[in-house]
View (cartoon, each protein chain N blue to C red):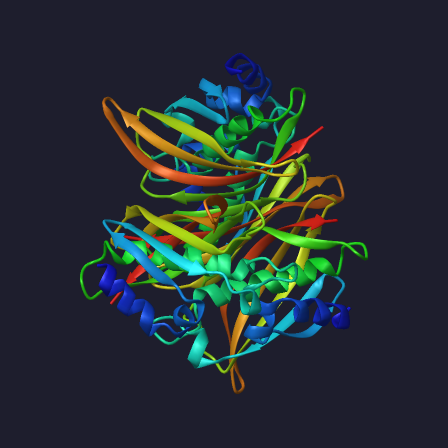
Length: 135
Length: 135
Length: 135
Length: 135
């Protein structure tokens, strides 16, 4: 499953640009890692842009959903709601996603984003995402 | 105001990377434009990544909020909720944001994202965003 | 359509208790009215309870969606996101809902809630709601 | 703390009507119980109305937040986002809320709603709620 998601991620040009790395995936869960780059990921204050916070959470939740749909199917994000708990500053960011309920028409997921600096690991954002299985 | 927001946008490395252009701003409203780039903005199907949908909407709502806070203050995104209505395919994307209610502690905004291809202009996503004025 | 929605509303015991009145409905839009009752609708401060704010917005958005589904179909609320802009105090409350995008699998709607006291009409909450057509 | 929240709940006329019972509260967490009443809590299909789903989740999250603010302060719901995972049918409903992050200006919470019938306990909805501490 991790290999499948790495292949899917590699076909997405934005994921390649952002450097999303699939750390683990399976059983309705996924973990993504993204190293910080000051030169093209910052908001005006120099911290991680809220757009990338949303991108990480949306992607990890989508990948978690992919682990529970039948082979050959994919998912499309329909609705996502992001809570920004703290300024997102770190050397890298780790997003985890989990399927809460998988239906035939809709898959509900939840995600967390941690900023990591050395041994320090801080929860900076949470999200819920609703996905629709396709094809 | 448009010049101020262009300056703010220019200080954000992600905004520079994404090519956000402030088309107009003032009076609680803002419009952003972003040309499409297949090589680093796509999801696995080749359309605009949901992360960039969220980034455009979050940014335009934040800029709309900046137009109503006292000079010298800024805003931080606290919560945003995005509805993806249709696959986001176009030559460029136009995001519009509007302040619904500006309080001292919180600013509520709403936004729309249109995909534009030639004369065709299609609503592909909507969002509501909650921002907190800072310093 | 207004008669159909009145009939649907009358079959819902909560709607009867709350006194929801369908003012108009059709073409992807709906308006509901609810008179204020201090004795069973208040939160601890004596204003309209956030649960009823959500109930009015969820219901009016659902009714707006019903106006666009094929006859005999209904809708179920899947996700709703509510922004409470101001304390909800008034003699009556008027909720309006509108379909933003109606797909085969999902219907996206938006709603507004106004508190009305005499000639005064104040926007107190907004919502977006996602509904799924059923059987 | 449980007594304090029972007193607060008793001052809210809607909470009295709905029969919310504070089962436990403290340390950023709360649990509410509400017995089902077909005669005034149903939607058109006879299940728990989405408005009451939202009311339970909003209330339990607010009460969880109250457990972490300084004595004498209260909270107001600012934004809540509800996911309806399954039709809500049961003899009683149990809502649990938890503070995710408590800041000076904003408190982020999350909640779950279970439908209970005999020994069966089913997750029917989740929510995230953002509250603002007041006076």
